[in-house]
Length: 97
Image (cartoon, rainbow, N blue to C red; front, side):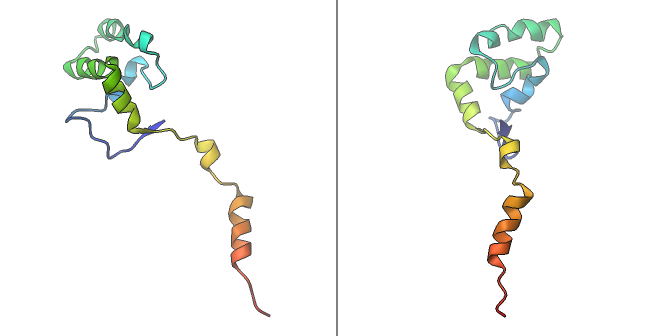
């Protein structure tokens, strides 16, 4: 999943960006997310910004809003093959002889 670079989050960093250093991603289960403060404290990373990010993500409603702003992109599927790009060009270019 990727985030639109123009995404703003209530004047602070995007929650997943703020606590990514401890391995939090959109695929982190909600149960695992409940233990994140202990990891942040153990690594001396529990800042007011990290606390707010965790607060936002532990709320199901706020987490769903954050994930709504992410795009599910599989880059391997989105990159066209050379054959897929040249064939349409061949169909478009016609010479009347």
